[in-house]
Image (tube, rainbow, N blue to C red):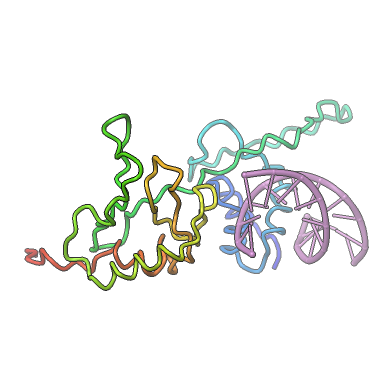
Length: 206
DNA sequence: CCCTGATTCGC
DNA sequence: GCGAATCAGG
């Protein structure tokens, strides 16, 4: 495939939106992330670090490509290869999406500021407000937590289970880290308790 | 190991 | 101009 106008535009758009090179490549198809990065550089729109939030979608800045200074390359911007501004860190576990099922989990109540933080040492009950979660699912979770990868916040990726385990106020806190279920933020076991098939409350008027 | 972007350099 | 290979980093 070649860099047609359309493809280049999509590239610009997505890059502007902060999409990663690999994502863009995936979207475009027929190219690798390397190709995308290469193109990005050739287009001269590498630094996405403009201090300003890069969420301006649809608003193409239309950067006028400076009239090439005939007088040699005087203002050659030296770019220290350090400015790197990593993308937002993996978002903390936030069960929130899907359609009907409502996220019931609050594995460890993350108490914000000072306010009676649970004294470390007392293993928190798996579920604050036990309810109609399939006992099976619960059992499964407890099992999984034994074999969890126990990864840190920094190690979370799109394909690692983000289910928090333990007390955030303690060293004994980590994330499940097992392979997530396609699309979901959690592994199979945790998806099971995170997203209820909506059982109670079905007297919906429509 | 997964991923990210940056650079190089033969084509 | 292109992009695989490689590098540097999280």
